[in-house]
Length: 210
Image 1 (tube, rainbow, N blue to C red):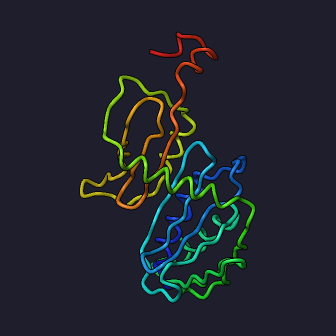
Image 2 (image 1 turned 60 degrees about the horizontal axis):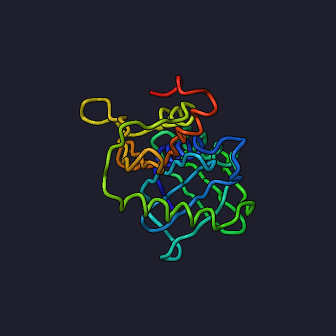
Image 3 (image 1 turned 90 degrees about the horizontal axis):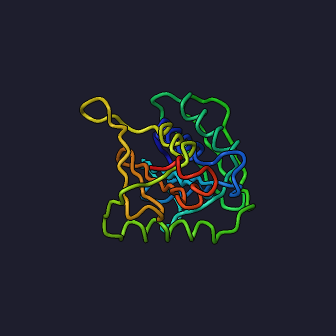
């Protein structure tokens, strides 16, 4: 496929921010198809997923999927940012990996398809997004979060709005125990698990809560 290199870099970077080295999930998922490029990263506590369009796609209509490690994601980010204003070519071969050829004729960037994570993890994440999006909106009186997980969302790159800001995080809240949907900009969406307030009170005492 052919796509805007800096868009690819943004998508890879945003997914990488939710895929720390200590993650219990050992790969990120890269999906391509006529509708665009989507990369999802998670450690089981927060999910980051971003999408960008493609200029041209040659492949099966149902698309293709590969799984990449953190190094491969970082390399795609770096290669895309260096190819300023260019349109690169991304070749995706399940079972083999990905090769990105930038428009600036730099050395191609390659990443291996890593089958280290069971596919049912990704099926569960897809169904989680679907289930959360279908809930009625409600607002609990209090919600507790791990500040470290919230900090990941501050790293998300998204187009700026007319006011020059555009990086507000819109949260879709159901209650204080269910995963919470988050959206930043038009293409990034994520999920964050709130902290169990009863367990937190047992660990740090009731003075740590409102």
